[in-house]
Amino acid sequence: MVTPSRLVRFTAILAFISTGWSQPAHLEKITINYATRTGTTWPLYIAKEAGYFEKYGFDANLAFGVHPAGIAMLVSGQAAMTNYPLEQAMIAASRDGSLVMIGSSYRKSLFALMAGKDAQSVRDLKGKRLGVSQIGDAPYNYAVGLLSKFGLTPRDVQWVPIGTDVNGRAAALVSGRVDATMITAPVYFRLEAQGFRSLANTSDYDDIYAPTVYLFKKSLVAANPQLPELLIKVHTEAVKRFYDDKEFALKAYLKFTPEDRADLERVYDRYAKTNTFERVPYLTTAAVQYMISHPVDDQVGARMKNFDFHSVVDNAPVDRLVREGFFEKLFGPGIKAEEDRKAKQAFR
Image (cartoon, rainbow, N blue to C red; front, side):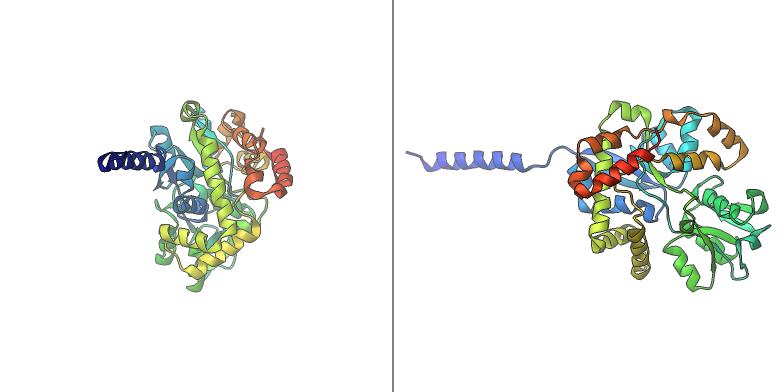
């Protein structure tokens, strides 16, 4: 006969076992740097809000810090990964070979060269003050690319380091501290409404490459070889959610970076139409070669031309995810053609 006391003890044991089984597995705490509050970081916002980090075993902290903060965080061990502009990543990796670029998930931003109301063309910027966050950062590199389309060189303008992100550069333009600067959408939409002029946009030039890469410290990857693949899975799940669920994508972005919703919808629609986020994130040969051919200065150019980037670019984790069928399971069998095409374009 089961006495009441035995029944209570038995019920308690069952409750304990049930509770223990329902607890989530141990989550690894990691920090991920993001260098800009723009669409570049959108999938990270989605991953955080949708629980994709937890799905793959991570308790992730997203930490903002403009260049060179991301590099410093990797080197010091403060961050496990950063989504970094390719050229800055290549410059950093070519210094001592201690960093590694594993895949690329983002093609380019809607990045406009914005100027005061008197400028009619990029050519009108000759001798003018052009604002960047830092000399050699992504806005600097994109500005140099656009200047070259109109026959100007970096020496034809006065570079003004602002030291902050896109909002700081916008403020410098509005205040008259600079005559022009590179501004991402949706911030430049507001400047256009104030009468400032968009002289050129990187999105209009297919031969200006401006992707981001997953950047890691080599020693961390050696100690945790599954880390890059797991984080690529997290990011790719977020990319799929971006394309599948506009409303969720907008809410995730606005939680981390408040913007005018109508302006952000314009950015979303452009990104979705042009497939800005890569479903199969190989880093391409064309992008790497473009950066080598368009260095920020002669000294950096000489170092990059003499450096073997095969030692710091690794597309193998993406290859393994292709072989195990991760992308096909996530996106469906129609992704196979894209896998084959991207694999042929990958830097090897």
